Length: 496
Image 1 (cartoon, rainbow, N blue to C red):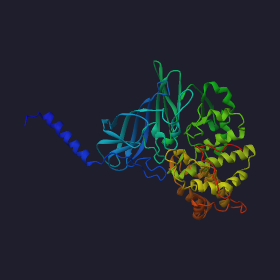
Image 2 (image 1 turned 90 degrees about the vertical axis):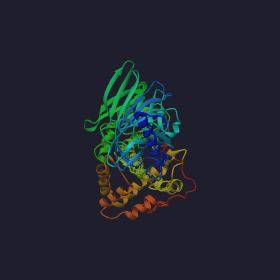
Image 3 (image 1 turned 135 degrees about the vertical axis):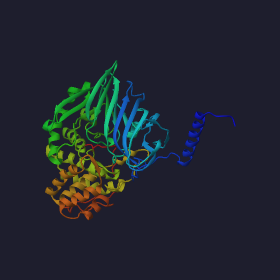
Image 4 (image 1 turned 90 degrees about the horizontal axis):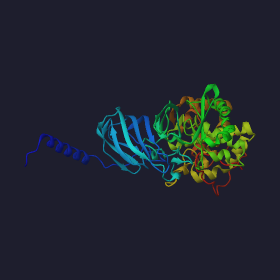
């Protein structure tokens, strides 16, 4: 055998060792945390603590953004490989704790081989250099292309089409966004501003959240925008982001947020975040979305002729209510979605009743009449049917909106207004900054009712048929011949 140098022998040994390790590790495969509705979302073995996402926008929404995503996490089990949810971008390189790491894709997962086996309880930093492509099918979510730039609509399973991460609301983390864009554009993101730097003809904008956030609630807006500041109750900083050309036209709508915020605090307790505002985007999505601290609204909601003022305000309150119910307290699983949408619809309807003389009882009676049809079409509120594989947003059906608000109406009738009001303030206080389950809510409701409500909730949340309405024995549910069309996203029904 020819003589080999020590360095070459070491290299050959390392190659052989790597081949041996590769032979003992299973092939890359997509994982998940076992969510019944989205089985491949989320990843086991680690808990994300923080995301630091850098994006470079080149002035055209038809061109991928350059991106670097840094993830600080802690392992919860020994790991040889780390799975991240990610698709709709090209991965150019990965580091784990500063060391180059091998990676592969499997399904919608990015599978990373750790340089060394990671023990449970260890801190780990994952850095992914990638592109973020806004040119995919807008119906699948992620980046939303607007008339002058981009925004995000990541619910329910679309954040990983923008950046790699653990894309499930059970794993919330703090976020830092660093977005570089041409100097004539304005960038706003969830959280508070944390710096702005000019670099020739571009500007880098930095924003940080001060509370943990689910990936589905991330928001970045890039466009020719005006940022409007005002004070909310107690001096809470409010900021709205609107197309610059529409600044004056939209002011009378934006000015209503302080009153809505004050009303919501009376219902649910102190606002749970550092700021709030509306992001009004010139785009057509078919829905509005409660992205954390900066809710996304279509421009047409405020400019379309014929929409009554009470309806527009009720939609604003719907997304505001989500900041307590869905954002601060996120669903632990997607089957717990009724807790988010049911509460937001409840407060939307309550606000319309108190401020526009739209009787809650009438709306709930109509919902009761259609409830069996909704359950037949999409499952009961806390056990919804699996969404269509090619249209995941079909999860957002009438049964999780008015059908779930109906559960809250029944609960109020069952335990009384006083106990119900105390429960509504306790829920976002006890579970603030976390994620919670339907069982958490039913236990807390039983506590405030002073009795076990298991049988009550079994029927209302899991039954194929709608139970009798407390206090309204004359209410009847129509025969479920034809259910209503599924809604396209977090949006209340259009007024009749």
